[in-house]
Amino acid sequence: MKRICSLLLAILFSALCASTAMAEAETFSIKELPGVTSPRWKQTYEAYGRTIDVDVDITIPETETAPVLKVCRAPVLEDPLRSELAEKYEKADKQDKKHYYYFESTDFITVRLQHKFPILWGTSKKKDNLDSVTTTCRDLINYDPDEACAENNPMTVREATEIIRTHLKEVLPDVELRLDTVVLYGKTFWRRNKKTVYDKGFYSLHLTQCFHGIPYMASIYDTYTDPNDQLWDWNNQENRNRRWNMFHGVVDGMVFSEDSWYFTSHLYEEKEPLCQDVPLVPFDAVKSQVENLITSGYVRWINSVTLGYVHFETDNDREFVLIPCWVVWCEYHKGGAQSEKKYGINDSELMFENSDYYRPLVINALTGGIFDPESTVPGRTKCPDLSAWQ
Image (cartoon, helix red, strand yellow):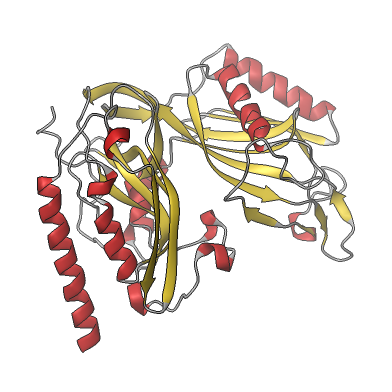
């Protein structure tokens, strides 16, 4: 108990020191940030018998202003385009017995397109059985975008990404996307005899929407991710609707070849700027808050540090606010130094999206204050006070 109390006091003292530092932090325009922020965070930390090596770029968007934006879910596609796509893809799916075609546009799914999607889980559409086959997959963390990384597939990461961008722009020409994560899949094969079903590897891509050159990086929900949190109670209709509302600003896709691909998009539509341009705190001035979480045993591995938009709720369940924040995607352990998990995501080979530990630390770039991942205060997902900047 004495050790736990000492740890809590140390964390509290660190947080108090960080809060005092934030009050004195100088702010800059987004154009000035590269000149006052270190381009890379490269340092080794020792904590509770673990060595944590941090070696990541500090990514700052190249843009003129950093507005705070009010957004809403993007509307469904309008006719006649919606009806034309529905008819085209339904017809193609009936005619092609070896591939899948699909189109959808709803209140929650802005656009979903599936074009010449191969039969990965069987020998025909009628005999498609996911439980009969298996494959290998892994997060592609460090890669050359102009290198072909998938097994028996000449397509590069950049080419695969451009296929998603191109076909989304055909139906939504004004959407700008940023590649966020890449998952590499191998060929699929029968579980029972290991014979090949689909002989090529392929890419699974996660892209995020950009506004005024600034990428969407996370929902504030993500920093509080906890299977035991009431925010994740899917039996509660209100919470389920709220979570669906927060699950936007992203495009997920799979690319097999130039004419064989799939994507589903959950996008935002910008309504108005709440602040035209806000001054921002450099990452160097807020980094100590993340370092405190590393040395106290909460953060075991860091994947990226980016200045980008984070989604907050408002009193209107159909309107949201995007605020520029420093977003540190990392492996975060709620138990801190007492956690039983000893290895980072890279060592344990856990997929990002399947890991309870992979989440963003969010730092308000307007104030320099970190959003406490341990907070259970009601309203913690609501938009912070913007009166000082309006």
